[in-house]
Amino acid sequence: MTKRIALFPGSFDPFTKGHEDIVLRGLQLFDEIIIALGYNAQKSTRYFEINMMVNLIESAFSKYPNIKVVTFSELTAEFARKNGARFLLRGLRNTTDFEYENSISQVNRQLYTDLESVFLITTPKFAWISSSIVREVHKYGGDVSEFLPYQLR
Image (cartoon, rainbow, N blue to C red):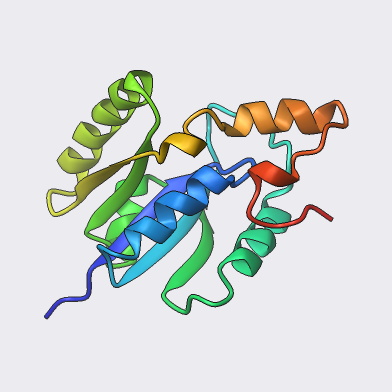
C-alpha cells in the first residue's frame, strides 16, 4: 500500500494552535504530514524569523515521528511532487478561506494531476485565531501564549 503523505504548506508567521489542530486531525487521515513553511512572494518580510519558526514547530511535534517540518521556495505542487505528497492538507475557517483555497487548489491540480486537496473545517474554538491577529497582539506586547502550541523565546 502506498504511503499517504500530505503536505501542509503555509507561511505560518506564526504557526498557531489552529494550525496545530489541523495537523493533529490530519494524522487520522495520513501516514505522514510535511509542514512546509514557504517563502511567500506576496509577503516581502516575515515577522518571525523562518528558522526560529521551524525549530518551534519541530519542538511542538517532537513526539510525532511522522511529522516533518521543512522550508521551501518553489511552486507548492512541484514541492509536493518532489516529496511524494499526493495530498495537500488545508484548514478552512470561513467562506473567505474557501474562496481563496478553492482557486489555489484548482491551479495545483492543473500543475500536478495526482495532487488532491483535502480541506478540514477549523475546530470552532480556534476559528477566530489567525496569524495576523497573533502578530498584531505580539507586536504591541500582548500575551500570545494561549494562541500558540509552543513558548516564544
